Length: 111
Length: 115
Image (cartoon, rainbow over all chains, first blue to last red; front, side, top):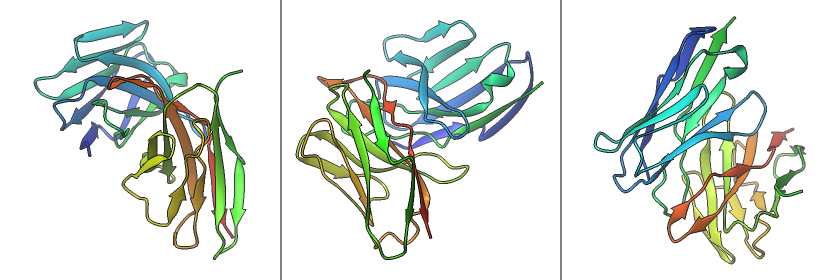
């Protein structure tokens, strides 16, 4: 299956600062790149995604950038708020019959 | 009200017992997945299914079994062969069309505890 790594595994930032999480994958055929957020005790939910024909996508304070050549994509959160504290997962997908998630990044926003 | 529903929310199992976790979706999704999540850990794929009557093992299928008799339903059985079943179990579904993929929707999870 896909080899997916996320860095860093934990990240602490001051409220108002920016946070960046990187996801590295191995399968060059991957064509869909989502990020999921999981709050404590809850289910993961999609927060932003990008397809392989686009390099960057932004939605208010969050953005995703894709570098297909280097096989990585990143989640950017600006003006962080305490409610951004959660675990974030990437799940690069190539249209096959499976769905593998990255190892997760625990983000803590310090008020 | 469309969505994906898991039941029960909490489940207690005695050692040596089999238990079945329910997962139902009314989103008309073809693909369904089961994941296990241990405290502070990521999501590990147990089984997945893309069509009715077909399913494939994920990374940690040993001690688990599934069925896919209906498009809407993908129950997971945790058998007595699973030596450490205490965990949070998540079911997910997604729409696939011609190798294209959309977001996965998750159920609220089942927390299984062995007593």
